[in-house]
Amino acid sequence: MGLIRCRAAMVAFAVLAAMIAASPVRGGSLEIEVTDPAGDDVVITDNGPLDSNPMVGVIDVNVELLNDSLVNSNPLTDLSFATLRATSNAPGGNVRPLLSLSGTVVRAAGATSKSTVTIRVSDNDFSFTGANRVRTSSSETFLNTGDGDRFTNQGFLDPGNVLFGMAILGPSSIVSPHHPPRRDEVSISLSQNPRPVGVPAQDGPFALTAQVEVTLGATAVNEDRSVQFATTTAATKS
Image (cartoon, rainbow, N blue to C red; front, side, top):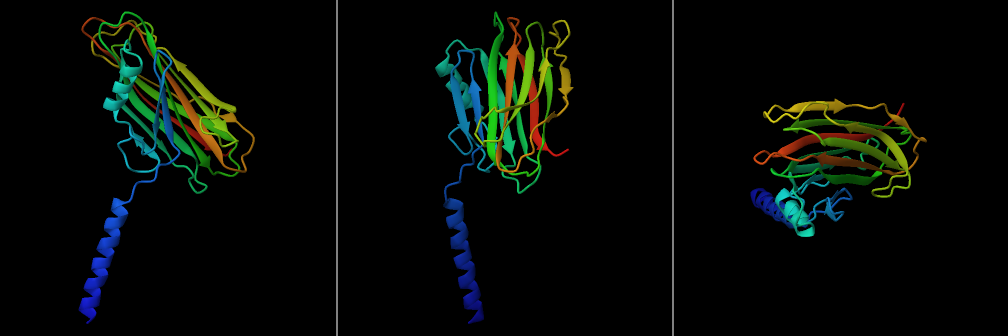
């Protein structure tokens, strides 16, 4: 009798597990917004159509669909993404809030002028009582870099908990590789850790946002130009 009950319990557990697996994945509030050179926006939501990762708080962008969206909104664009990813630990349970954004932007061969794409990532409901500093860091690897290449990173904290809110400016960095054109497949890697920015101590939920602008200059007829980047935006206590 005990064996029958055990088997019944195992069957019930298997059915419950199957039901959980079949349940729709809850989407988080994490979002990425990409603005192409024409000024058109593509919004990528956590567990939305362009997110290939079912985990809440992680967006692994389906770059094939994203690039199709960029081409459809701006047929003349020659910028594309090889990768794009964002993570967030909101609400975090009073753990240091951390928002990350990484990716690779590629400029097609034969481009005759520089072009810029803007990427924003944001999440809200961070809980870290007493947080009074915003920190950012970034790193970049430029391939076939030359005149016109630039990378900027800016962090924000919004005490009103508004997604993409920019009420308080955090640290920023601007990078232009100070080298002659490198058309020899030798990459140039840089990194930045600007001084943190003090903010009023937080006693409620808040939002964090990071904004990245990637500008890539003209390219040779047979050579793509690209930058691989990674950024973090965090709230800390002094």
